[in-house]
Length: 134
Image (cartoon, rainbow, N blue to C red):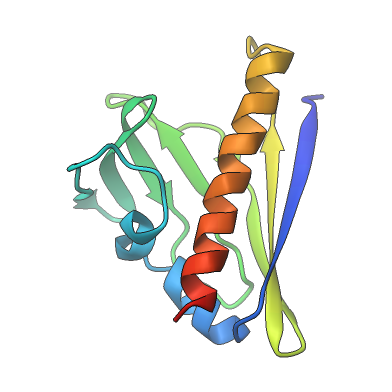
């Protein structure tokens, strides 16, 4: 079994507002880490070509749903898909909680895993700050 780390970020905005924003892949550049000057290019369905700090990749987003599921995959061009990163949004009174499970993939060192957790956490804090300022 892969080692995992759960990240939970409270967002003090209504659930429907946060989910609507996060479920739309076109909003990713507003808070996600893309290379400067890069744009997301829609490839069809829920796939987008993006320039991430670790190179050009395809991001596959979960289509909007009524369960708060925001899972995504990141993989290289020419591949059929990649590991699923589980992401959920839960309503919590007037706000909501964003929960992401980051898993240590085979071949990833403990140091890289810890660094990845910090990187992903900073993304989640960026979306929290962005949405709470709106």
